[in-house]
Image 1 (tube, rainbow, N blue to C red):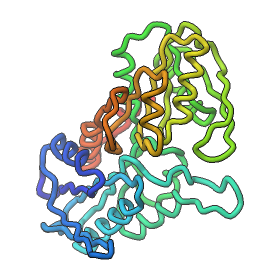
Image 2 (image 1 turned 60 degrees about the vertical axis):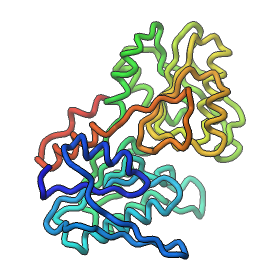
Image 3 (image 1 turned 45 degrees about the vertical axis):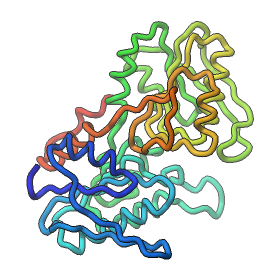
Length: 310
């Protein structure tokens, strides 16, 4: 790895960052996070970054300390005269707050974009944003990668007959449709109604799933309520099997228990967020090679469009 390229990790993404650095052909840079007794912390680079292209890897899932830590590391790199600062955010937190869907609410994704810009990032690299328009919240280049480039080969390797690609809700229809077209498969859509956030009150399936092997596609699995309800409903309608593919394994609250007790055969996720506990139904596919390859192309000013399968 060139001495002018340095990769650092926040504490939330150390495992993934290490894998990215190895795939890139180097080691993680030395950074220290000093914690004070009241919970405040300070980021410090323990090696020079003057004139270097700095990549800081940190997903911004809860708690918000992960976002604050990333901001402090970006600020530290800027003040240490780094030439370029790329925030590698495999999971971009607050992405579900991309618009005003009711009066008097914050647009959290735009606020985070403003904070990162103010801190001094010169580029953003992320994966499967909850809403594509978030790219427009930034005034710096955004490399928006798609996990489809690793998920599609996996789905093909399963050799599933009578394949149906499913969307667990109407918001995921566009994503599921792209997969269905690429895989030349039929499609089914789950229509859900919510009484409040993270709680599905009613759900129906649009499309034929009887005797089919269904693969549900989504970007985030949080409490897994929608996913497990959709899988159980499809099995009750005669589906042969139901698998789910979700990029970001937030898996909060009762998610693990719901997945274990559901009719889902397998949940395939990436390592953009480290799993909090083991689950026999969950398979993790690493995105380290993908990020390392794109980082190399960005440094060499090469096209990355070959990574956009769907």
